[in-house]
Image (cartoon, rainbow, N blue to C red):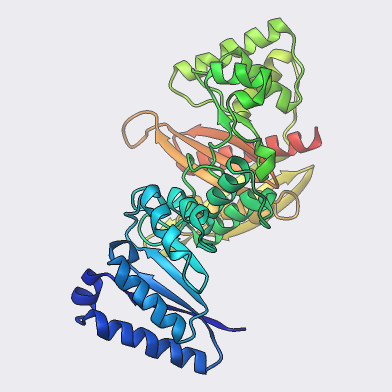
Length: 406
């Protein structure tokens, strides 16, 4: 059945300043609109906007009038995110006794959306309004993945949500909406199951529960070890294990030493860096499956940035062209088109840092790529930002292909 969400301002601030009306006229309008919607065969959810700043007795009078007019569901909106969990529990212990099911709709202005939503559900709320990745107006709304995992892991209640699909859904929404997920976002952020500090990784080797409240596999993730100057021997051992690279104690010491040299120079050590260092120490030669033979880029104030590439892929030549918002974007798009039938690679993150000053500065490009559930970081360093970008992407793609074969 079709439904409609009727939003009614219920705080005096909204009633007087926004609508220029009084309480009684707003309540009458709510009843009139509810009756109108019901007469057209709609399921009605009557929502109190800015309910967290409204007089509770007045709010209940609006809800009760709406129920009498046929409202099927009710909704309490914390429109500016000012609720506290204790107050939320108190409010919903009262509102849950109304004659129609009630839901909670929280905004995250003070970072309390998940806590308030869970409190409302514990106090008797029948439903919760949530969004993937917590996207929404201003600081966003309650995050689906956080609420689901709090209920599942901390309150030990299963929902009908497929929790293994949380991460892939998060990435899909981020890609389609163009809104990136913060690296430190809980559950689905890039760093949620990433470890660098040596003491953390040492604990993980003994028991993953030491530094992980849930396993990454539970939500469709994989554990990741970040290497840098803070990483210890344990980090390298675990990272090599995940790469499927066996090494002796002496070889591990050599790899750690070389890796820390990079970290001490202020460089972030990528997955590709570790693989290259390990292969050098172990005397392994890995021939790149994809090689760049030619790159041409055309850009200007009256020209759409266009790039053409000629690659050697598994011994065969592939030529492709692409356009973009800038020369780097065009070059990467050309690469993607050239490799679409070979490696379905997605560029998740792209960062540029100038290592030296001046117009001829040496730049370092750092990328994070994914292929299916596998991710890898790689970098390129050149005075030409376009070549550095292409170099980083190709390095990452080749490493992902090597990992997949292993």
